[in-house]
Every structure is written in C-alpha cells, then in structure tokens.
Image 1 (cartoon, rainbow, N blue to C red):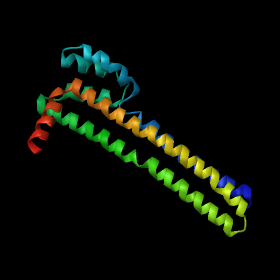
Image 2: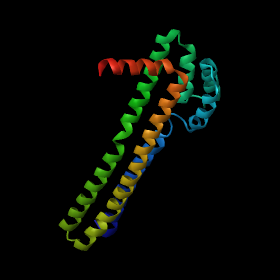
Image 3: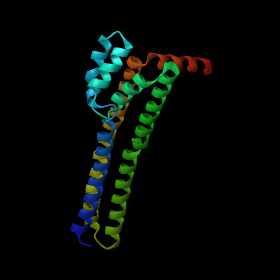
Image 4: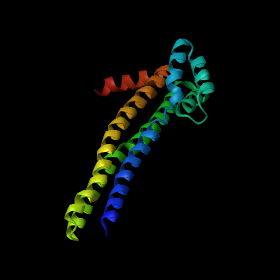
Length: 186
C-alpha cells in the first residue's frame, strides 16, 4: 500500500470516529425535543395540571417525548395510571440515552487502535516516515471525537434535567411517589 493508501485509511478512521460521536450528540438532542425547553416557562405559568398537560400535548412537536408524556398523562386513569405512564416513558428515555452513552468512547478507542495498527503496518512494510502520516489523521479524529464526546455527555445531562422538569410540571404525584420510595428504601 502506498503512503496515500495509509493516509486515506487513517483519514477514514478519524472521520468515522467524529461521525459516530456527532450522531450520538444529534440523537441525544431529540428527546425531549428542542421545543420542550421553550415550553417549560409557559407550563410554569399555568396553575392547573390538566391545563399544563393540554398545552404541552398541543404545542409539542408530533411524536416528541414530551408530547407523548402529556398525551399519556391525559389518557391515564387515576394517580397509579399517571405514575405508570411516567415510569414507562422515563424508562424508555433512560434506555435510549444509555444505549448511546458508550458510542463516543468506543469511537475514540477504535480510532486510536486503527491509528496504531496502521502505523505498525506501515513500519512493517518499510515506510517508517509514512507511519507518522498513517497515524496522524486517525489520531486527530480521535481527539476531535473525544472533545465532541464531552459535549454529548453535557447535552445528555441537560436532556435528563429537562425531562425531570417536565415530569415535575406535568405529573408531580409521580415525583412525590418516587421520593417517598427513596426515603423508605434509604
């Protein structure tokens, strides 16, 4: 393989690492939706829970997590039904975020491993100076992916906090029940 081949393979590894972390960041921003952040102040101004749920269901984007939460809460019968709806949708959100949480770490590790592999392979075939060029793009991609991964983790925390705030505003009984269970078990 020529120096250009090593460089292209390394560039592909670095680009793939950045792409994977960018996709993680993008997917993390989807639930709750970006519209939810603007909706929270409006919901705080409303005193009635039924009115909050109606406004949230009507003003949320179709299919959004917060819209589904408000709709399920409006359909639920009794406090137990609302607590079940919150539990189910909260679990779904947590599972979705947890499934993506490791993407960034894996992408960085794979890019570094490929950089080292390409460097060793380049030296093995006699391109000692080319080894640096074979490793550089993948390592730069790994550094960029690592930096993006920090942003993805911060975004995930912010999304979890936003979801908690929405639950607090739309179903305070679910939060109270959870806090009571924690006090009993702790």
